[in-house]
Image 1 (cartoon, rainbow, N blue to C red):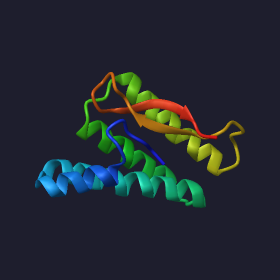
Image 2: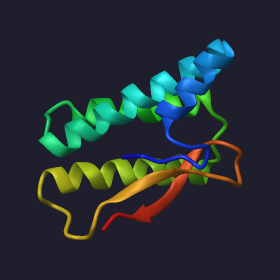
Image 3: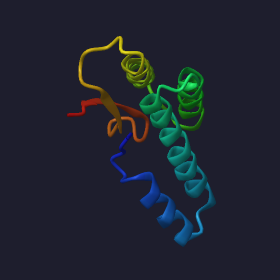
Image 4: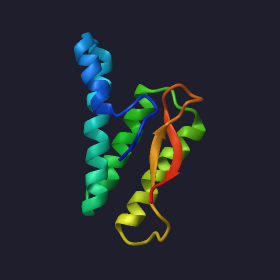
Amino acid sequence: MFVTSEGRPDARLQRALAAGNLTAAKQAAFEIAARELVELYAEKGGPKYDRAALEYLTRSMAEGNPSLADVAQIAAVLAERGLLMRGLWTRPPTRLVRSRRTGGGDAARTAVS
């Protein structure tokens, strides 16, 4: 699962709903659905993984303010997951965490054991 420094998307969604913050609620709901869908495709070897990963990357670029390095790292992690899914990658999978230096873009690669 993808993790952010602001907490899990489901917890942020509940906070946003409680506060009546529509923008934050929509963003958290998107993250929950998109991230979980991408992870599910990766885990199940779904043929729609690449499309879901590209949609996630495109939307994260449109809704956030990621640097070029952030985008490259997100794309690298998503591509790695696709290779793992196809049995073409031998290193442990990585996950995305929210970048603290950019104020919100998914970026840092963290090994999952």
